[in-house]
Length: 319
Image 1: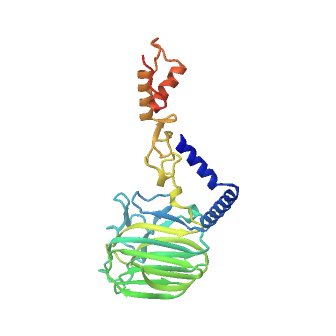
Image 2: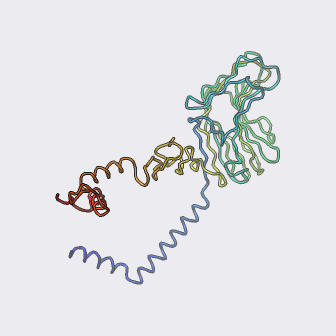
Image 3: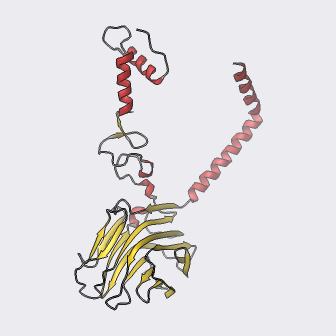
């Protein structure tokens, strides 16, 4: 007890009125700083595409139904040309991000990327323009796209502002396309290497991943994964709650909870206010420690006593 008193006295001495004022002024300044920083932090929507194509966020489309197959059951998203004949011209399959569900068009700085693997892009039919592209479309009609094409096997940038730029010879079957905008400067990268910069301040309106045949029946295919988009106005994917249990997915330790279940703060199923394990413990406690007077009945006071024993608050009553 003496040691405790000494500690309390020492604590109170350190926080005499002048020090208390200093403490609260400093604490207020720190809180204000972090609140200000929080307001300026960008948000990130990320999707590994490992759990299938979530239609809340993505729209799948192809120019001719059946011309391409798609598979989202293998921990990624795969496009492939089928045996159906191309009737001619440019044909494609794509996934487009639903920006409307993520805060709408983006007017300021942003960064977005997507990775691909197992790309098969032959030009056996003679076309130079079979391609995989990561494309941005802006509200003013401008666009910019990073491409892996069969045109002399290159990575390049095709832009409505700059034309065809940033070409490098490449037969890459895997890599990462990235766009960033800072101020008015839009930059494009392949595997972290800068390919092009241009000025574009228009609102970003659409982000699309496209696999395209150019007047060919070549069996092109690709696997896509690890998409992300970061901007101040973006609603983070962390806010999604796929099993509708009230616990957002990034904090949910028990995804896929049955509809209508009660859950704890970790998203795990509970019975009433307690988990099933806790309920079993309480029932066992009631049976073991509840009937104090031996009348084979458990009244309220005995039930409370049993719960206090279970929680370690009190010792069991001797029967």
